[in-house]
Length: 583
Image (cartoon, rainbow, N blue to C red; front, side, top):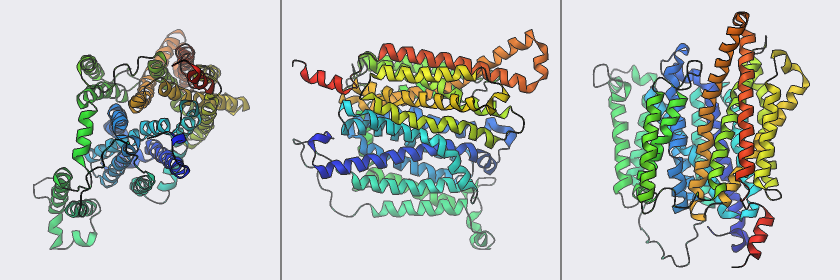
């Protein structure tokens, strides 16, 4: 995609509108990340999981995280090869299909598959949108657009619970995902309409495939959707009918409802649709083209990296921090990750076209952005999880009160993201990031001295706002630093790695910080046994220690950013120097 200065005004306006709707898609996917917090109890009940069996529902969360994190690098690399917009539309399609599967799921397996596809699609939107920003704006003008994308992504944490509460007030949890489907289809159509492919001057025109799109494939998809809907929402009149009721009786004794005749027809129609996508002349989804892109993007290397990231996700996402940092199988997951990392390193050294192009992360600000992003996520999760927990320790405060208390932090976060993006053009990325994380560290230090009564003091609002602004300030400079320090042909994979690093940091952070707080609490109880008798005092002590630990990691992120981002050319003055440089 050519730079904005090289395109006519009309094309430039369409590109700006395209970026706006891509940002809306990012926001909608971010909302879905947080909406499950409210819908989870009802989702568990629909698949016969009681509230005291929360560990059985862990795959609903970890399935989404696996899709979100493990496939990000491959998606980012495909965005480098095919362009960001085709990946955006494919991600919207995956998110929509995942929402359909989740909405009609009646057992845990189908629900986890749906959530995995939602994570896959939602995660793919972020690096593709950042790559689109890099394609539309020169280096010195990317700060504010990146800040806006970061802001709408974080806005999901504010709007998600509110959206979920609004929808659940008049319908079931399935309505949330039905709205996702409608929004996904609408955004898909709008993005495809606004996008005008720009062939290279030397590129030969693509062969024209004449004839109608795959009518048989469309018919098979329609049958599959209708059949799935009838399986999940069977009309009572048909079930009780002596003739049509037989179509809802499983053909295998004790089999699930998908093994009834209507369910088998739906499954068969879906298989036909998949086959048509592979072999039809004009398929609705060109699987062959995407298969070639995945191979070209280094599918083997992406698999190694997906296994490595997936092992980390499973080790920490399934852990009970009150027991240990890892789950019971955590060491085995991490061992698998370590083996996959070794295989990935060997593969990247030998592959002709590796997943991460050679030298793409050689610059200090490039790999430094990944390290800073990891520690930003490590500290951020303490605010998202432990601020509401501390609020709940005060007598009379409900879950809603705790959420509203956290809202002050969350509202400041996107404001800080926009401000950080605006400042990137005028100040070094390392200075802005360090300033933001120092603000966050200071806020955590204040929180570490809070008790339950401190939340009623007006100064508590100041600490929350300062902390949210600080984290927001750090988001855009980190993204700008890695985009400015990597080649244009690797912006997608670089953006994906930044997002993955922050998510992994959040997963590790919640386990490590919570376990640290509990360990400190155990030591305090040994010194003062009376603390064990006051549950609220013990809980407050634990949260104070978590905030203290988060302050340390926020401070570490600030120092690393100040040191590692010194050579990142993100400002206007950096671009001017580059133009004056000889050669």
